[in-house]
Image (cartoon, rainbow, N blue to C red):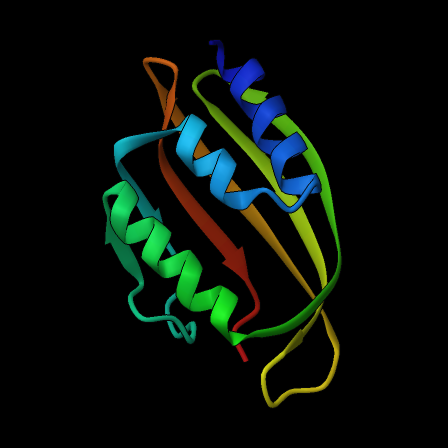
Length: 122
């Protein structure tokens, strides 16, 4: 698959809330995931699809309710694509909020090999 095809599939899966399916189908087994410094996650950098799945599960466990999600893009440039994500979300112990972030993804040999997210850190 081309970078554009992967980006389009990733965006469609995310619009449907199928994060796991996107990871399973589109991510390389050795993918790297980077979060913002100071983010309240288990690790700023995780390596490997299993670690990414675990990180996503930890995040899901902190979510009280996901009221909606909007995916902007994707925009493709060479072997990279970017997309914006806007989530109407209630996290455990917090009021309902709108979280916005930008993800940058790199594709090699038809798979996502890295993802990095940018957002405001409280």
